[in-house]
Image (tube, rainbow, N blue to C red; front, side, top):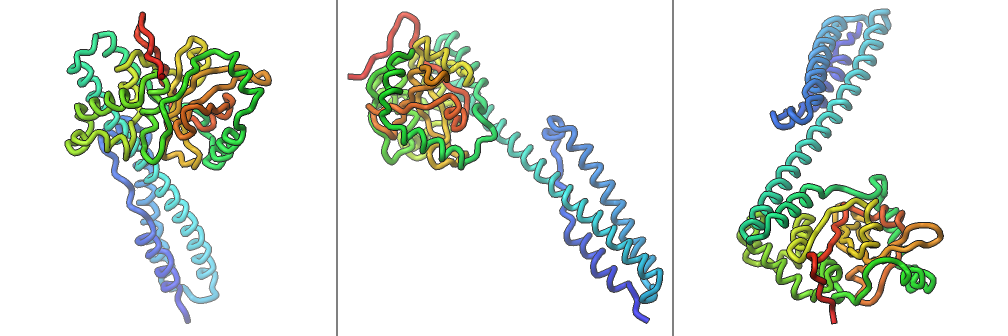
Length: 351
């Protein structure tokens, strides 16, 4: 006579003990913003308790059944059903833990973002910015958000950039762009090995020399408490190694004039009014974890669609890139930052 106890104990109990993941704990902060996770965790805990009881009951019931008996067949059938329920529970538990981790990371990001925004608003006040400039800065900093096509893949972004770069100096596009609305002047230079695309982009948008924009960026970083002491002591190194974050781009733009965060749907309008738009895009590598700052200078119509003229610091001060609204949406990371000089002033153009 052979018993089923070894079979059941060997495959059910250890599976429960070893494979079922511990459920992530939920902090009060996460619970307040995601109350559904609280009820979801409670449901999983109740289900887990039930499964524990089922394992114990089945092991006790089938501890001594005779081989090839009806009882053995029943135990095998119950075991298979229990293992299926267990695997399903494990899958739901892993999904739950992943959602909680994402919520924690998002909350951490919001906290860090709030800290940076608070530091920037405080610095603007300490620098003696007018009430109007402080208000514009605060509004712009709180308006930054994702924009573009959320379904765009890295491969699609790489393909889009290839199309844009391969287009080259298309004569028809050049002619149509020349009739479009927006600014047109030489760029500030060519980006090389550093992460200073934002400095080039803002220099291109304002028509100011790279050195002027870089000096102002150094000042803001050196005085901004959102950076640690080592970074504040070496602001140029921060620019070269890490570049500027979205909030710093906004603040730097506001320091030279007026910055307004606008969605993709308003890019063409802003350009038609003569206001260039700084945009953060995924670059040619297609890695959505990093961005590259460029500036749109003109908009025009081509084949019945809206197109843009882009200044990309990697392309040098003279070359312009032409891309459609669809292509821009594919590579876009965030809302754009429309720049305009202060009223009754004009930006100093490059010579």
